[in-house]
Amino acid sequence: MTTSISPPDKTVVPDSAHRESVASFRQWVTTQLEALENEPGSENDVSTQDPLERLSEIGPVIHTRPREQPLSVNEITKRLFSAYQVDGGNIHLGGCQLTDFPFLRLTFAAADDSSQVVHLFVAHDGSSISDELAVALGLLELEPATKPYPRIESLALNALIASGRRVAAKTTSSRDPQAVSSEPLATALVWVKQANGKLHFTIGETTATLPFSGWAKLIQPKPFVAEHSGAATFHLAATDDGRIDAFEQITACEITGERLLKDELVTCSVTGKLVKRSLTEPCPVTGKPTLTEEFDTCPVCQQRVSKSAITHEACAACQSLHKIKKDDPRLVWIMGEHAHLDRWNHWQLAETLEVYIAEATSLFKRLLVVVDKETLVVRHLATAGRFAKGWTPVLEEHRSELLG
Ligand SMILES: [Zn+2]
Image 1 (cartoon, rainbow, N blue to C red):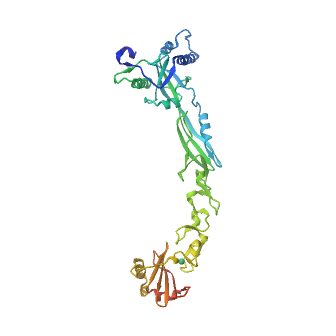
Image 2 (cartoon, rainbow, N blue to C red):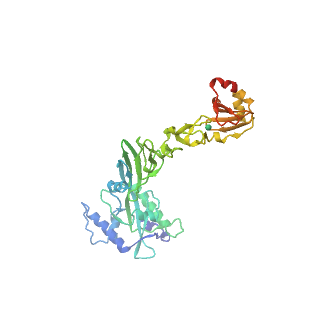
Image 3 (spheres, rainbow, N blue to C red):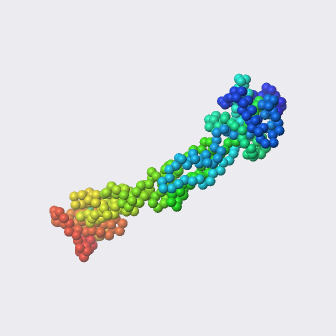
């Protein structure tokens, strides 16, 4: 044994936060042995033998499992399914696999109290594990594992035990890197179940998938993250065109009643209704989405603008004309295309998303020209007396006289 080949002064007694009374530990060992003896084919009657002595004779490890952990897929799915609400559809399991992973529990006599033992734990990959995780996984409350035990190669088992002994040596106050732990009273393999699977949410003909993975005892439902909106939710629903998304992200268009994602709906600047974006156009004056039937023609510039942009017989752009110099680049550009406009002075200008609205004043007359910002095509041309209220449109055949 390790103790017999190690110098006594380098043998250290490990410590751990996980303690148990010797009496309780012996009771656990007895329970483990009884389970083994009840196995078919067991020949030994050990009722008179000391349980710890008997334990050391049965092999390098005893096989155990947490007393409380899901043993079937059903127990896990019950917990997961209840977390989700699927409007107009259902949830089902798209596969689930339970796999046993071996954790190691080493038990030592406590250094400071002969009535206690301490337990040390090592994860399946040989790493030490936090006290919290050991408790959460149920590694302190063990019951005998039932045969057939999950398989573990002897090389892997030896490596795990060696890791356990290294972890044990580190838990002491010894600063000697050569120090080895004292012999454990018991070495137990704890088979911990890991669950891997998928949840399927089906509404109509569409199915969305949510994978899950983790220690079966600790697995918790996690929110479904919708592909389209990116929202995380436990409440799923579908749009009318069959896309599964978060219930909170789906709203009906107030015109068509169609259920769509919120970001596919806009508020109409005139009616205030939440409507499908494709039913609207941006108003060239306000830039705000507006239902196509909520546009009107501005009495001044004759452009199609949202009803809410027209007040006092003119759109907001026509009411916001401001003085500009004749060498304003926008005016220079317009005059480059329509040379006769250069005859006019005292210019004022306003812009919408689509047009320039320019007004010039002479001694007796005013001129209004509405020009497409991209093409410089004149969309509307009108004249008025210097002090007249209304505008008179210039007929097509007279336009060239004014524009050149
Ligand atoms: Zn206007």
